Length: 511
Image (cartoon, rainbow, N blue to C red; front, side):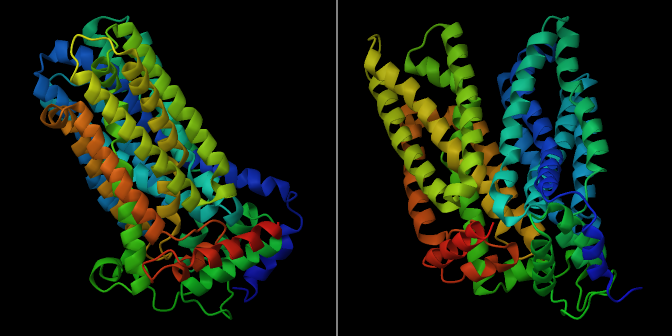
């Protein structure tokens, strides 16, 4: 073992490709990690069309169908709860492979299902894959990406989910031409194909450098950092920062070392997160859970899953008009997620979150008001109210997608200390999926109890409270190295954001 193994890696790096290839390498890693989100999106999109044929073929009741549609997010709690420990044990890369394996098995089980219990088993297996994928993809990307592009790369999963949804719609269209008992099985079963390509592609990815350092593999960690950093000096600096965060002395430079006081496989993490957290960790956990709660409790899944119903209540009587409006929702959502991804490293996480939640509050208030007016004037065609309702659905989806959609995953994947990151992020994903499942399975009942306008006014109240929470509790994290994140938290206010921004400006100016 050479005591200067890491430094030798620096010399070797001099003969490697120019630095311009480094950003492309990190980009490719983010793309491969985010492929799990395409499969997730496909499952959401394809089920919306397949459910029509499943109900007729398997003779399901409305209650059974509603459970089948919304239960995936509840099942995903199993995967998201286990993902943190698994990724600390196996590594981030093989956890992504495991997620792909669950998707593969779940798709096949659903495709060959002969009755309701059989298809629910397949849904359960696929749900575990969803839980794994939603936690590990942004965590892996955040740990591989350089600070200057971490926000954009970590928000890739949101873009890929929407691509997957569109692919699901295409699958519905083509396979709907088959006999009823075959069409929905092909729709669901074909989801196994991209899982195979995902598993193969991920094996070509490097492991997370932060996980490698925690295993004492400093030489391997430096090789990954050198390939994904903008400069050689940045790679060295990132390695030093990770070592300090992991409690490794600076004079330990062998390629492979024994990590001092190493807690294997995530032992002690739950105690440090939930039982006896430091003030900074407690603040981080509150911020993570709060932002995930706000993302889902403000009603995005109600709009995405029930757009035709909303447009019907708004006064669009023609099914063709309802479907066209629903397609427009999907297009707007995808376009603005791309916009949010492009500007998250320019304007910062905090600014986008505040702008997003403010726009969502205004949109939800106008949507709830217009739907209430329409509901109280049955038989009348109030064009202004119909136009306002349709428009505010679009503005709600747009403002969600530019901030609350992608930034939630970016923010929560980067704020936890390295040893707590995987399992801390998994707690946020569990809350996110639980709320998504509850809202998806109860929105129709809620809209009957409060009226559909009242339901959206309730979501507007959540958005208003979320804006206050973001403004008060969330510091800016743009451009801050992951190993320095913890210093921004602990006071339960965002009063350190100015220090954060000044550090960020130094990073940007130094590029």
